[in-house]
Length: 137
Image (cartoon, rainbow, N blue to C red):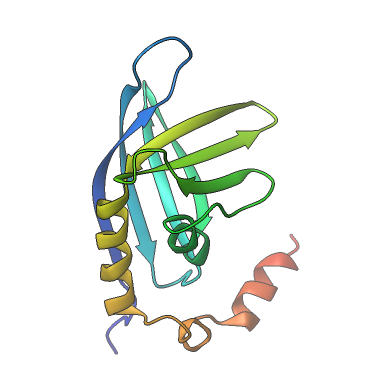
């Protein structure tokens, strides 16, 4: 039987906002894996290594329209309506990024073609995920 899962991805040019300077380009890749239908991975190509953040697909979509998120990921429309702002924070540091809103929306449309909103539970195997949490050597 063929594996029904797939990964949808897109390369998007994010920019790192910096104080007193123009935003610095930061190439990124968005990945949507049907094995985790609720999340989008944002892979930032930062120097010698990649930084990977998981962001809720709904959070990403909602952030296109109004400020959303609490804690370590917040997304909101920018002052320039063509852009969104993504704030990421962790114990190791924080970053404020901007990205073209239309490119984010286009990527989300591709993910909705694969798994329409509301049908994520059909793709999520709760028992498998629970087994991962309770795995012991």
